Image 1: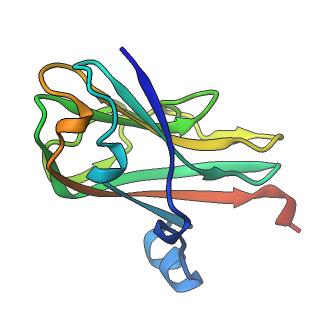
Image 2 (image 1 turned 90 degrees about the horizontal axis):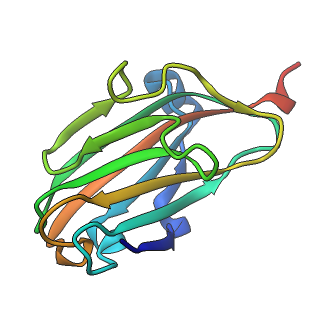
Length: 155
């Protein structure tokens, strides 16, 4: 099993407007394409995508993955979302082979808020569990939504 690291392109990281934040409850959107994770050739390889850094003092109290185009070309591909220190802190291992929203629930997420008093790195880890490999992906797109609150900006 090999792990390949990848940093998402800044063009696909979007702080949401105040209106979008009020409507959705999320502050940031990260768009991931199958070409980003089509790395590694082993049947149990993982690809860790660095999404970005958090503020120094922060809380992340909401997470959602929206698979707009199902990932195809491999037997089993899952995502987990969290930080470099706690990789499944927001979304636990969930398949991305079917389009749809992967909302944090008691079975797909850790039940506590993600918080720290030192900056962290948000990551999404993609795991190929059975046949095929990440490099065999032929389709797929998803967006990761999180609500990051900078606690230093509170009055």
